[in-house]
Amino acid sequence: MAETLLVEFGMGTSLRRGDYTQAAERAVKDALWHNSINLAELFGFEKTDMRITLDVGVQQPEKVDVDVLRAVFPYGHVTVNVVKGGLDVPRPEGQEGAGHPTIMANVALRVGFEMERKDG
Image (cartoon, rainbow, N blue to C red; front, top):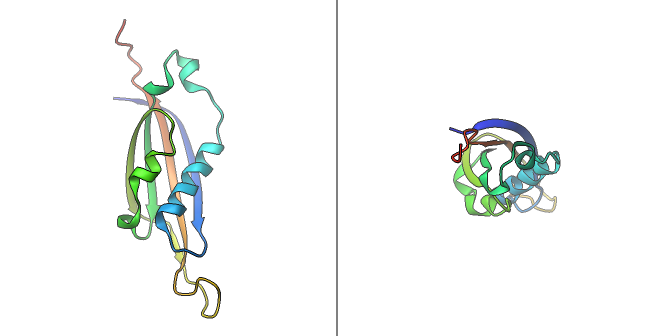
């Protein structure tokens, strides 16, 4: 089991398109941009050894393309969990994008490693 060493949070929006994947992808990038810790090197691991767990909250989880979210990460083993959460904010009639709410997505990003080395 991977030991969690870092947790970051992010928020993203899709202002006019009503796109849950876009909002979630922006939230992931927001979380990633918050940290610049080189965990792999600090613990003597390769970046490919990272165990990344991504929890995404949006009002319509079934509308999130998890493959798009996985593609944001250049390395590591990524597990994506999408649950009901976030917020849909109605847009007033007559405003650009009316009929599509502003989508707000929240993410929690956990990074860890299998701390017992296989080579001893």
